[in-house]
Amino acid sequence: MVFDKFQDVELPAAFDAHVHLRDGAMSELVVPTIRQGGANTVYVMPNLVPPITTVQQALDYRARLQALEPNVEYLMSLYLHESITPDVIKEAKKAGITGVKSYPAGVTTNSSSGVVDYTLFYPIFAELEAQNMILNLHGESPSGSSITVLNAEAGFLPTLRELHARFPRLRIILEHCTTAAAISTVRALGPTVAGTITAHHLYITVDDWAGDPFCFCKPVAKTPEDRDALLRAAASGSPKFFLGTDSAPHAATAKRGGDRIAAGVFTQPYAAQLVGRREGREQGLEAERYV
Image 1: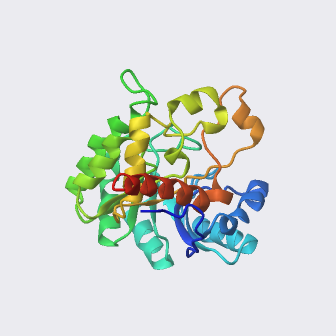
Image 2: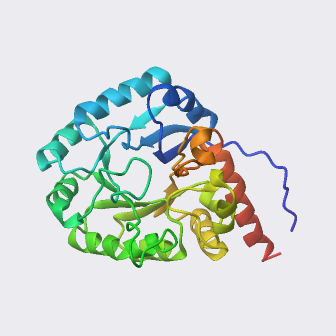
């Protein structure tokens, strides 16, 4: 059996289920790269400064993005915050907002207003479930006595299981999975639970970000075995896993250091190309095993 390694394949535009488009001057640079990266529909994260916590803020933000690139569909989200009530969720549903994003307090960029205790938000989750909206989870526990960046995702998985048990019809996305444990957990839970996989986590491991700040992101890349689990999930065709690049632009000076290195890898201009190349390689290796 012979495989043509140079065959051209034309794909439809992609849906990127996790993007950071920033605001102001940074947004003007980033938004035009969405189509360049092969996507025409994006799910926009709300962690601006200040965060997007009201319906009007989300609609105004979408209008600014549409003015920059009208040929993209922007699915909007709210930032899970103590000011959000069940009535806000009902208003968001009527306005066409897709979901609510949960950030554990302090774990990533612009997450200082994030969640400390998920039980306080159970009424919000119940209303999201009733409205058939999405709860997006940044799946890490804050660093503490037994939690570091290397096991923060594993430390969060019991919370994911608990939320699914309490709200079995709530559509939950565990974002930017980085471990074999996260993949197996998403697989084991019901059909309302899914996971996104980034382009960069299909390539990098802990050794990359330990030596290169431009590969540093949250959650951090893990072991080669974890990366292989992500590759297998991405190439499996399972509807439980799909692309969410978590493309996160920062000024180069913020990535090179100072008081703190900014967490995020910017892949937006190359998103579909990076994933297609990596998944194609994985599928090719699988096929070669049967030659």
